[in-house]
Image 1: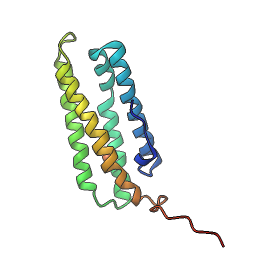
Image 2: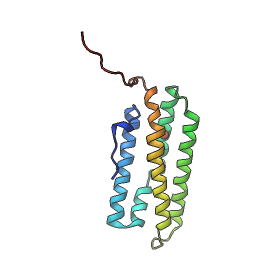
Image 3: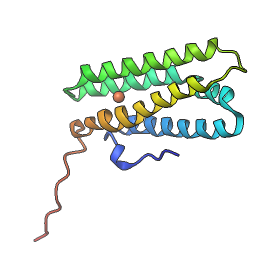
Image 4: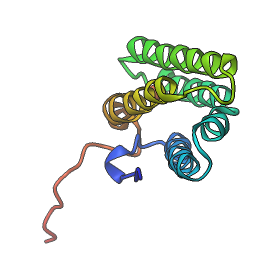
Length: 145
Ligand SMILES: [Fe+2]
């Protein structure tokens, strides 16, 4: 089970909320996989995910533009690649008979989720934090006079 941690915070409440929801969605997918099998679990996981991710990424990019985030272009490309991979998996799933072996598709999906969380969220999204006005770099507490 994945757990959202403070170290994953982007410093922006709405972006953090969307990421917590995505992590909850992954955890629900793992539960559904155990309880209902791959065909049902993948179907539930993919339902609405592309549209939601596109909305979340657009929001992030808007916040990044407004915050003079210097890695916007590279970040935008990462979003594009994640969405393209997601669309590819979605197409494969839709073309697949319900009783087919979902092994390869599950591997592709697990790889996408891993890159999305461990690379994109944990390494790229968190870089926004230092450009958020209410989240200055950590300062050691000063002793009071
Ligand atoms: Fe992002």
